Length: 115
Length: 111
Image 1 (cartoon, rainbow over the protein chains, first blue to last red):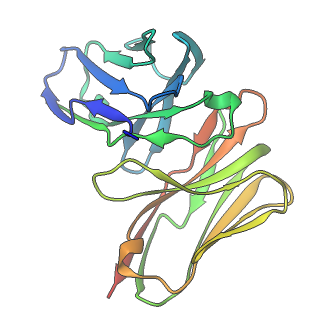
Image 2: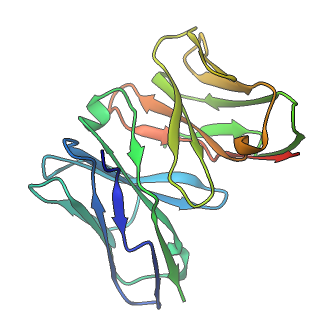
């Protein structure tokens, strides 16, 4: 069974640019969550999508957005990049998301560096 | 917002030693989970706890859901080099179902 796939794995951008990250969940999983991981801050919740609808949102500015497609694949976008956006962005999938048991299956992440 | 306080932040131990880490919260959680993240990988679920007072083992790992529903601990017995990584606790908000993660405990094991 294929795991959660995130692309790209690594990318470098400059301040002011925008970036789009992609996540393909495990087959049959309808929920996709996104987390930002930085040293010392742990995993900060960005948002959760279920059946193409944003169901939960974290405390991030509007520059961070996402969407989910009918095949459950998800993308997140960060516009007007800032240096502080440098982080590992993790995508996690589950069958029913936060209505479920809380078990998430994570991808390997996309490491974004903003210069 | 909700926060989890996870301690210690880091540990450097000798192979064979036991390890203990814990998480506390100001909020009540329905579920406590413990994840491990190996270098270059995403976190992987180790143990899930669903009832206050529940004590669950997974091999050398033992975790407990605090009776107040505001804390949890994870013990690793007889540590080995492959235990190296970052351990995260996570609590599931009883209202929204959202998972809140702790800051992580970085474990290093000296052979």
